[in-house]
Image (cartoon, rainbow over all chains, first blue to last red; front, side, top):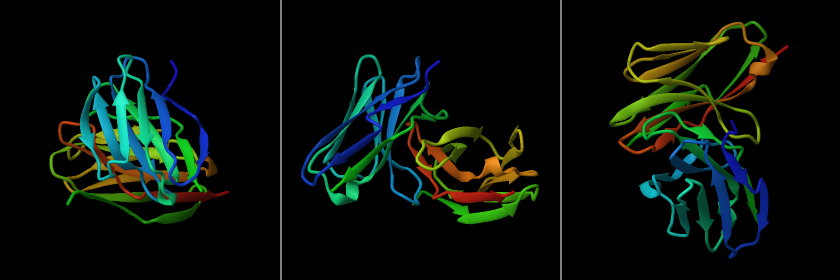
Length: 112
Length: 110
């Protein structure tokens, strides 16, 4: 079975632009979570969706938004990009809430 | 405030030299304690889930244990391919929110 997939793998944007990152969960997984990881730090929780509903939100500004589609894939949108948004964005899926999450390879976002 | 703290930040060992990584946590409504391995530029790879104090899990040279305030990842006779960052994370509440520590960078010298 394929693991969690994310696209694109790398992305370069300039300040003020917006970006859309995509994630496909493991087949059968209905929960998708998004994390931001800056160099030298652990992943920081951004959003969690289960059955297309937002179930949790981390301490990120409203410039960050996400949604989950009927096939359980998900998008993370970031508007008005700042230099500080440069990071590895990770998507993780799980079969049920409260269970272990499996991560994708991440999208490396660079904001210039 | 919910917090997960890992120590040491970095650890260099000779091949075959056993050691332990520490993860202390203060999380309300803990639902599970997770260990992940992360190689540079890649997503974290799931290793273990621990749900209750006293629980132990093993996989090859790794063994994870859990108490009410800490978890340990014991590495027995490590090999250079065990070099990676090891992340500890606590799951809380009824959602999937997971709080990660900053990780321990482990380097095994041949």
